[in-house]
Length: 279
Image (cartoon, rainbow, N blue to C red; front, side):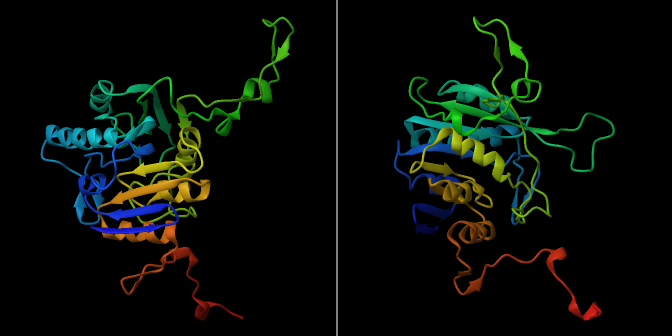
Protein backbone atom coordinates (compact mmCIF):
# COMPACT_ATOMS: atom_id res chain seq x y z
CA UNK A 1 0.00 0.00 0.00
CA UNK A 2 1.22 3.47 -0.89
CA UNK A 3 -0.42 6.63 0.49
CA UNK A 4 0.16 10.28 -0.41
CA UNK A 5 -1.59 12.99 1.58
CA UNK A 6 -1.39 16.69 0.82
CA UNK A 7 -3.66 19.74 1.18
CA UNK A 8 -6.66 17.69 2.26
CA UNK A 9 -6.35 15.08 -0.48
CA UNK A 10 -5.44 11.46 0.25
CA UNK A 11 -4.42 9.15 -2.62
CA UNK A 12 -4.16 5.44 -1.82
CA UNK A 13 -2.61 2.78 -4.07
CA UNK A 14 -4.20 -0.45 -2.82
CA UNK A 15 -6.99 -2.96 -3.18
CA UNK A 16 -10.41 -1.41 -2.54
CA UNK A 17 -10.93 -3.33 0.72
CA UNK A 18 -7.52 -2.50 2.18
CA UNK A 19 -7.99 1.14 1.22
CA UNK A 20 -11.50 1.41 2.69
CA UNK A 21 -10.30 -0.15 5.93
CA UNK A 22 -7.92 2.80 6.47
CA UNK A 23 -10.91 5.20 6.62
CA UNK A 24 -12.81 5.80 9.89
CA UNK A 25 -16.47 4.78 9.92
CA UNK A 26 -19.08 7.54 9.54
CA UNK A 27 -16.48 10.06 8.38
CA UNK A 28 -17.28 10.72 4.70
CA UNK A 29 -19.83 13.23 3.35
CA UNK A 30 -20.12 11.97 -0.22
CA UNK A 31 -19.09 8.78 -2.01
CA UNK A 32 -18.93 8.41 -5.79
CA UNK A 33 -18.42 4.82 -6.97
CA UNK A 34 -17.52 3.86 -10.54
CA UNK A 35 -16.38 0.23 -10.14
CA UNK A 36 -15.35 -2.31 -12.76
CA UNK A 37 -18.48 -3.34 -14.68
CA UNK A 38 -17.64 -7.02 -15.31
CA UNK A 39 -17.87 -6.49 -19.08
CA UNK A 40 -14.33 -7.45 -20.11
CA UNK A 41 -12.44 -4.15 -20.14
CA UNK A 42 -8.66 -4.23 -19.75
CA UNK A 43 -7.23 -2.00 -17.03
CA UNK A 44 -3.51 -2.49 -17.65
CA UNK A 45 -2.75 -5.75 -15.81
CA UNK A 46 -6.29 -6.20 -14.49
CA UNK A 47 -9.05 -7.88 -16.51
CA UNK A 48 -12.57 -6.67 -15.75
CA UNK A 49 -14.17 -10.10 -15.78
CA UNK A 50 -15.25 -12.42 -12.98
CA UNK A 51 -15.77 -16.16 -13.42
CA UNK A 52 -19.49 -15.86 -12.75
CA UNK A 53 -22.01 -13.06 -12.32
CA UNK A 54 -22.59 -14.26 -8.78
CA UNK A 55 -18.90 -13.81 -7.97
CA UNK A 56 -19.02 -10.26 -9.30
CA UNK A 57 -22.14 -9.38 -7.34
CA UNK A 58 -20.86 -10.87 -4.08
CA UNK A 59 -17.61 -8.93 -4.51
CA UNK A 60 -19.65 -5.77 -5.14
CA UNK A 61 -21.93 -6.26 -2.15
CA UNK A 62 -18.89 -6.54 0.14
CA UNK A 63 -17.44 -3.15 -0.84
CA UNK A 64 -20.91 -1.57 -0.95
CA UNK A 65 -21.37 -2.54 2.71
CA UNK A 66 -17.97 -1.06 3.57
CA UNK A 67 -18.77 2.19 1.73
CA UNK A 68 -22.05 2.54 3.63
CA UNK A 69 -20.14 2.14 6.92
CA UNK A 70 -17.80 4.99 5.96
CA UNK A 71 -20.67 7.35 5.09
CA UNK A 72 -21.90 9.90 7.61
CA UNK A 73 -25.54 9.79 8.67
CA UNK A 74 -26.08 12.91 6.52
CA UNK A 75 -24.03 11.54 3.63
CA UNK A 76 -24.88 10.67 0.04
CA UNK A 77 -23.80 7.82 -2.23
CA UNK A 78 -23.72 7.86 -6.04
CA UNK A 79 -23.01 4.47 -7.56
CA UNK A 80 -22.67 3.21 -11.13
CA UNK A 81 -22.32 -0.12 -12.86
CA UNK A 82 -23.30 -1.65 -16.18
CA UNK A 83 -26.90 -1.77 -17.37
CA UNK A 84 -26.73 -5.55 -16.88
CA UNK A 85 -26.02 -5.30 -13.15
CA UNK A 86 -27.58 -2.03 -11.98
CA UNK A 87 -30.88 -3.74 -11.11
CA UNK A 88 -29.05 -6.09 -8.72
CA UNK A 89 -27.29 -3.13 -7.10
CA UNK A 90 -30.64 -1.34 -6.83
CA UNK A 91 -32.37 -4.22 -5.06
CA UNK A 92 -29.46 -4.77 -2.68
CA UNK A 93 -28.91 -1.10 -1.80
CA UNK A 94 -32.55 -0.21 -1.24
CA UNK A 95 -32.52 -2.52 1.78
CA UNK A 96 -29.86 -0.32 3.38
CA UNK A 97 -30.30 3.20 1.95
CA UNK A 98 -33.01 5.30 0.32
CA UNK A 99 -32.59 5.66 -3.42
CA UNK A 100 -33.74 9.18 -4.28
CA UNK A 101 -32.97 9.16 -8.01
CA UNK A 102 -32.18 6.69 -10.73
CA UNK A 103 -30.10 8.72 -13.15
CA UNK A 104 -29.30 8.02 -16.78
CA UNK A 105 -26.03 9.44 -18.08
CA UNK A 106 -26.58 9.67 -21.82
CA UNK A 107 -23.87 10.22 -24.43
CA UNK A 108 -23.70 10.19 -28.21
CA UNK A 109 -22.28 7.41 -30.35
CA UNK A 110 -18.56 6.70 -30.21
CA UNK A 111 -18.57 5.89 -33.91
CA UNK A 112 -18.88 2.10 -33.97
CA UNK A 113 -22.47 1.03 -33.36
CA UNK A 114 -24.38 -2.24 -33.19
CA UNK A 115 -25.99 -3.42 -36.42
CA UNK A 116 -28.13 -6.32 -35.18
CA UNK A 117 -29.51 -4.83 -31.96
CA UNK A 118 -29.96 -1.44 -30.24
CA UNK A 119 -26.58 -0.28 -28.98
CA UNK A 120 -26.08 1.09 -25.48
CA UNK A 121 -25.65 4.86 -25.22
CA UNK A 122 -26.09 5.38 -21.49
CA UNK A 123 -24.83 4.38 -18.07
CA UNK A 124 -27.04 4.25 -14.97
CA UNK A 125 -26.32 6.00 -11.67
CA UNK A 126 -28.10 5.53 -8.33
CA UNK A 127 -28.31 8.53 -5.99
CA UNK A 128 -28.79 7.28 -2.41
CA UNK A 129 -28.91 8.75 1.10
CA UNK A 130 -28.92 7.39 4.64
CA UNK A 131 -31.36 9.93 6.10
CA UNK A 132 -34.03 11.46 3.87
CA UNK A 133 -34.54 14.28 6.38
CA UNK A 134 -30.88 15.23 6.66
CA UNK A 135 -28.73 15.25 3.52
CA UNK A 136 -27.00 17.81 1.32
CA UNK A 137 -28.55 18.91 -1.97
CA UNK A 138 -27.43 22.29 -3.30
CA UNK A 139 -30.02 22.76 -6.02
CA UNK A 140 -28.96 26.36 -6.77
CA UNK A 141 -25.45 25.15 -7.60
CA UNK A 142 -26.52 22.88 -10.45
CA UNK A 143 -29.36 24.70 -12.19
CA UNK A 144 -29.61 24.48 -15.95
CA UNK A 145 -31.55 26.39 -18.56
CA UNK A 146 -35.31 25.79 -18.61
CA UNK A 147 -36.28 26.19 -22.24
CA UNK A 148 -39.94 26.80 -21.46
CA UNK A 149 -39.10 30.05 -19.68
CA UNK A 150 -35.70 31.01 -21.07
CA UNK A 151 -36.33 30.42 -24.78
CA UNK A 152 -40.04 29.93 -25.37
CA UNK A 153 -40.98 32.52 -22.73
CA UNK A 154 -44.31 30.84 -22.06
CA UNK A 155 -46.68 32.25 -19.43
CA UNK A 156 -48.17 30.21 -16.60
CA UNK A 157 -51.78 31.36 -16.47
CA UNK A 158 -52.64 29.05 -13.58
CA UNK A 159 -51.11 31.45 -11.07
CA UNK A 160 -53.16 34.28 -9.52
CA UNK A 161 -50.98 36.68 -11.47
CA UNK A 162 -49.91 35.21 -14.84
CA UNK A 163 -46.14 34.78 -14.68
CA UNK A 164 -43.50 33.64 -17.14
CA UNK A 165 -42.08 30.22 -16.41
CA UNK A 166 -38.68 30.11 -14.69
CA UNK A 167 -35.62 30.41 -16.91
CA UNK A 168 -33.62 27.84 -14.89
CA UNK A 169 -34.41 24.51 -13.28
CA UNK A 170 -32.84 21.64 -11.37
CA UNK A 171 -31.74 18.98 -13.90
CA UNK A 172 -33.93 15.95 -14.32
CA UNK A 173 -32.60 12.41 -14.12
CA UNK A 174 -31.37 12.21 -17.72
CA UNK A 175 -27.95 13.84 -18.01
CA UNK A 176 -26.25 14.43 -21.32
CA UNK A 177 -22.48 14.79 -21.11
CA UNK A 178 -20.04 13.73 -23.84
CA UNK A 179 -17.74 10.83 -23.11
CA UNK A 180 -14.05 11.68 -22.67
CA UNK A 181 -12.29 11.50 -26.04
CA UNK A 182 -8.64 11.52 -27.02
CA UNK A 183 -8.58 15.12 -28.26
CA UNK A 184 -10.24 16.50 -25.14
CA UNK A 185 -7.95 18.39 -22.75
CA UNK A 186 -9.00 16.22 -19.80
CA UNK A 187 -8.24 12.92 -21.53
CA UNK A 188 -5.97 10.40 -19.79
CA UNK A 189 -5.03 6.92 -20.97
CA UNK A 190 -7.84 4.98 -19.30
CA UNK A 191 -10.64 2.93 -20.94
CA UNK A 192 -13.55 4.20 -18.81
CA UNK A 193 -12.59 7.74 -17.74
CA UNK A 194 -15.58 9.76 -16.54
CA UNK A 195 -16.00 13.40 -17.64
CA UNK A 196 -15.22 16.32 -15.35
CA UNK A 197 -18.67 17.80 -16.03
CA UNK A 198 -20.40 14.70 -14.64
CA UNK A 199 -18.40 14.80 -11.41
CA UNK A 200 -18.84 18.55 -11.07
CA UNK A 201 -22.62 18.18 -11.03
CA UNK A 202 -22.53 15.41 -8.42
CA UNK A 203 -19.99 17.09 -6.15
CA UNK A 204 -21.65 20.52 -6.33
CA UNK A 205 -25.07 19.04 -5.62
CA UNK A 206 -24.20 16.72 -2.75
CA UNK A 207 -21.30 18.32 -0.86
CA UNK A 208 -20.14 21.65 0.50
CA UNK A 209 -16.71 23.25 0.62
CA UNK A 210 -14.52 21.43 3.12
CA UNK A 211 -16.53 18.21 2.95
CA UNK A 212 -14.80 14.85 2.42
CA UNK A 213 -15.53 13.04 -0.85
CA UNK A 214 -14.51 9.40 -1.34
CA UNK A 215 -13.92 7.54 -4.61
CA UNK A 216 -12.94 3.88 -3.97
CA UNK A 217 -12.24 3.12 -7.66
CA UNK A 218 -10.49 6.32 -8.65
CA UNK A 219 -9.09 5.42 -12.07
CA UNK A 220 -7.60 8.70 -13.32
CA UNK A 221 -8.72 10.45 -10.09
CA UNK A 222 -11.23 12.76 -11.77
CA UNK A 223 -13.24 12.88 -8.53
CA UNK A 224 -10.23 14.10 -6.54
CA UNK A 225 -9.27 16.48 -9.36
CA UNK A 226 -12.72 18.12 -9.28
CA UNK A 227 -12.69 18.22 -5.47
CA UNK A 228 -9.41 20.12 -5.56
CA UNK A 229 -10.95 22.70 -7.92
CA UNK A 230 -14.15 23.05 -5.87
CA UNK A 231 -12.62 23.30 -2.41
CA UNK A 232 -13.56 19.85 -1.16
CA UNK A 233 -11.31 17.30 0.53
CA UNK A 234 -10.95 13.92 -1.11
CA UNK A 235 -9.91 10.32 -0.60
CA UNK A 236 -9.13 8.30 -3.71
CA UNK A 237 -8.32 4.58 -3.84
CA UNK A 238 -6.84 2.91 -6.92
CA UNK A 239 -5.27 -0.53 -7.23
CA UNK A 240 -3.36 0.06 -10.48
CA UNK A 241 -0.02 1.84 -10.00
CA UNK A 242 -0.03 3.53 -13.43
CA UNK A 243 -3.43 5.12 -12.80
CA UNK A 244 -2.34 6.00 -9.27
CA UNK A 245 0.58 7.94 -10.74
CA UNK A 246 -1.83 9.82 -13.01
CA UNK A 247 -3.66 10.84 -9.84
CA UNK A 248 -0.47 12.06 -8.19
CA UNK A 249 0.14 14.26 -11.21
CA UNK A 250 -3.43 15.50 -11.72
CA UNK A 251 -4.34 16.16 -8.10
CA UNK A 252 -1.07 16.88 -6.29
CA UNK A 253 0.98 18.18 -9.26
CA UNK A 254 3.69 15.62 -8.59
CA UNK A 255 5.91 15.07 -11.63
CA UNK A 256 8.45 12.61 -10.18
CA UNK A 257 7.49 9.37 -8.41
CA UNK A 258 10.25 7.28 -6.84
CA UNK A 259 12.83 8.69 -9.22
CA UNK A 260 10.66 8.27 -12.31
CA UNK A 261 9.06 11.05 -14.34
CA UNK A 262 5.25 10.85 -14.39
CA UNK A 263 4.66 13.94 -16.54
CA UNK A 264 1.82 13.61 -19.02
CA UNK A 265 3.03 12.26 -22.31
CA UNK A 266 2.21 14.54 -25.26
CA UNK A 267 -0.62 13.40 -27.50
CA UNK A 268 0.22 12.52 -31.09
CA UNK A 269 -1.19 15.77 -32.48
CA UNK A 270 0.81 17.82 -29.96
CA UNK A 271 4.18 16.55 -31.24
CA UNK A 272 5.57 18.80 -33.94
CA UNK A 273 8.34 17.55 -36.21
CA UNK A 274 10.16 20.80 -37.04
CA UNK A 275 12.54 18.96 -39.39
CA UNK A 276 9.67 18.52 -41.84
CA UNK A 277 8.70 22.19 -41.83
CA UNK A 278 9.89 24.83 -44.28
CA UNK A 279 10.96 28.09 -42.68
